[in-house]
Image (cartoon, rainbow, N blue to C red; front, side, top):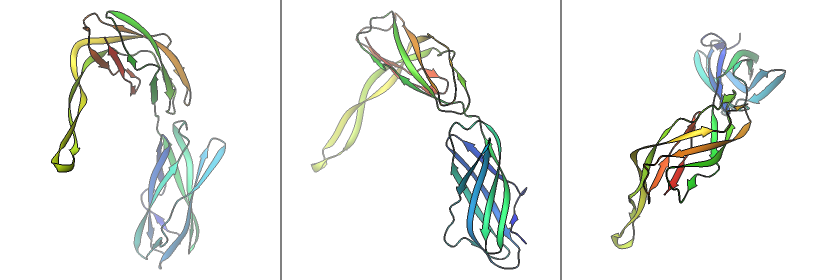
Length: 238
């Protein structure tokens, strides 16, 4: 008699990004203690079957009429397409081999990473338009269409004080730290291209940044524009 699997009998694994996780509760009603010597995971992804071992403690055993939880964590290819994949867990135990069906559900992960070509601009004279570019990488597993960058408020970058520590003789060491104060102005952005980026791909996109006339001279302002899920920093010194 094999070990019983609690629940539906099929292990659910959920994957997203670079990892997939799940668990299985095993019940031992075989009439004696059972030792689990090995646990292996197999997943069918397209035409390729992927394999991995599930780490077990040295004393991984299940006493009669008790439960034991196996925690499953595996690395996965980050661009694996969303969907459901047939899997199984193969156990090698003191009462023989046992195969447990499993299902890997990979969630859709629309995620980009943005790198600004130039994050700081000096000697800016408003009103003006600044031409720059960003590199956008698709680090998710579904295509991402880049069609716009929303307007973003400008913040004054002001200096405050930050306590660093107490030195010898009780001397307090303090250094300035920047903080952001909202202004009444916004930056607007115009994209030079609106690409659709495939998983694992990237694109360099030109951007025109419109700086409003209300930004005064001698200012240091910052905006945090967003492309899809990722924000990047733009600093202007006038």
